[in-house]
Image 1 (spheres, rainbow, N blue to C red):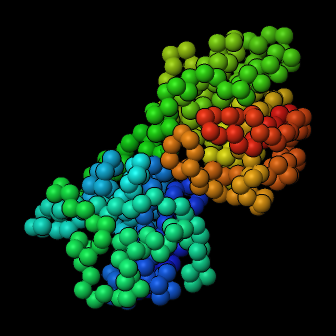
Image 2 (cartoon, rainbow, N blue to C red; image 1 turned 135 degrees about the vertical axis):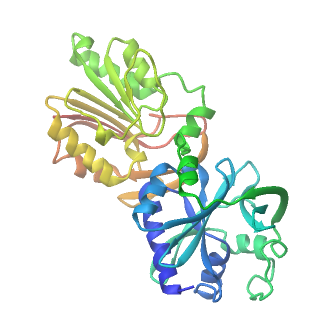
Image 3 (cartoon, rainbow, N blue to C red; image 1 turned 90 degrees about the vertical axis):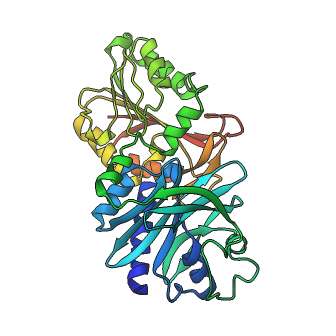
Length: 395
């Protein structure tokens, strides 16, 4: 394995994953070598990365393909044991998709049986947090409890190289499942497999939290403000950006507002409300005079937000834009930060957080800022009471 090319591939994948909000970390032999020796292990034929399966989407593999990585083969299924081998410039990377259950986290490896079928083993880990580490001048995500994770897999003597290492017999955490899978090298089969209704956090979130049907406090706040501005709510043409399960969209509709919804991650239709399962950047915004974005700004990368803000400003006239988003306060001192953290409603999830001052600097040249606060008690859910930013913008 060409180590220089291998590191370049890892850097490129890191950049793609960060941009898309894919939760990943260096794992297995790659983590062992870089942490123990500050180098990739000589003699390894590939590098290893683990990926939280709940944070993947079609975009991830489209971007990998656009970066000139090829799909070599894949094993398992999305629901369990998914593993994809990709390559660029003759260097392979194994993407091990991680499944997080209550007390058990695992990914799967496969051992050839007869050239047709492979036997599935699960590498089981205790839950861990992620942190950043710098290797060869580049930052990567790794388990924060690095040596604890390495001990689970390689044992107490993990610091000593083992020339007789076996991926099935040597790991302390390898569990034989007796499940057999055929690997596939077919691009058509892979594309068919990935033709799923987004497996991301938000899809899982809405499916597993069906009690979230009542409108948000922010929706009530916005309706109250609109009632002060409009004698006839029927004159409003509103769009809910990142409408999710339509709970706020339905609330506005039921109060006499003409509203449509847009959401790329979750496709829920309602016979009375027009919805677009598409990117907000692909929707014609000229027809709207009220824009609504609750917990959408922190779910998209910054360049998408910048495109959206400029699109609204250039395509629309005489509009109001309501935003509620999580703040970076009490989480990071940086003016902006990509963050993965556990919430009470599901798995760890990517968020792009802004400080109040940074967001204000971003918005001020484009809009008239009528209202901007940063406070707690705006979006309480179960144990969560985060700092949030509420904003009202005018054209």
